[in-house]
Image 1 (tube, helix red, strand yellow):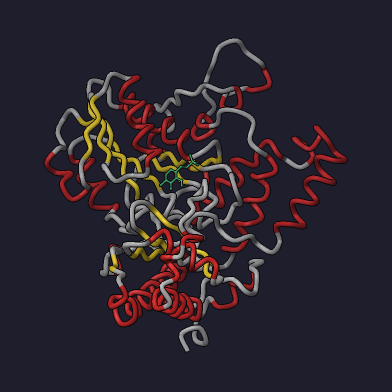
Image 2 (cartoon, rainbow, N blue to C red):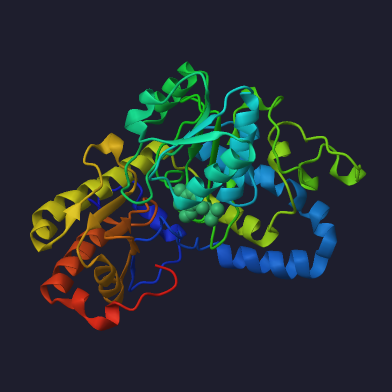
Length: 401
Ligand SMILES: Cc1ncc(COP(=O)(O)O)c(C=O)c1O
């Protein structure tokens, strides 16, 4: 019934999904857009294969990072000239944290949340070390206790990768600004699923990956957003030639390109970047408010079924209940979470495990249906009733969990 009245039900046809699989891992690797294989084949055969290096001009490869960045900008509430696709999320975080710190000279503290994605913690540690700053780890709810005139930047993730908790970006950003610091957000687990409004929320810098809800494909390049108000003064610490004001003048000293161009660094991975461009067409004619409403409808259904069917079977919900505090995933703890996920995959429902005990199920709003939620809960109940999660074959740890 929920699917029959769903205004976005037709969007699933924009993806090539195996018939016999329920795919709840779009928050790790998004599904493949149905137009992507032909588009990539054309890029390989006709552009790279036939037009060779002339493709940089003939197919405008050079401007693809900005062109694709502009498409992403529209999904995260930024202006077209505030986003560029480049590098990985980790590298972009490094660039913006250093840039933010340098925009606040004399301040020597960076703030991050302790439960942030490990890459974010490591990168923040490295930036603090390189710039001789102090790194303070604090839960977003306690931010007020550490904000003072020494804080240069506060870097949080919009949605927690483990629990699915969504932070209140506007109020955290406002508190950050009140102390004179800059606000940096990692949108990896929100862009493409939530109604992100970077400019309305007054965010300074943001980064995120494109291979999750944006469906860019494995290893697709990440993006970086810098508010226009920083375009003149900001400096990326990675002064690569593609970020130069005149890259083909081959000058011996660096001058950053205008605005967001200065966040480019090296040659983009064109095959992945052009695959991402085609993948983003799945969002055509959709408003992010509609996408977010569908995501909430899916997670709400999951939570109510988890309460009625799974709570008595050893599962506990860790994802927040209030809609505004939830991303687009449902995370459940279970004492045998790893075995549960492996047994679930064997039953045709792909989710993932996050240490130490989380079954993480991503409800990508463009292609997951309400029937998929019902089927997943049924399979979880059936596998636990059969004790499958305890079978030794489901306990061998693969390299990637
Ligand atoms: C929140 C978050 N930040 C950063 C990263 C790292 O991204 P990358 O491997 O593109 O550097 C990930 C990857 O899953 C992530 O989930």
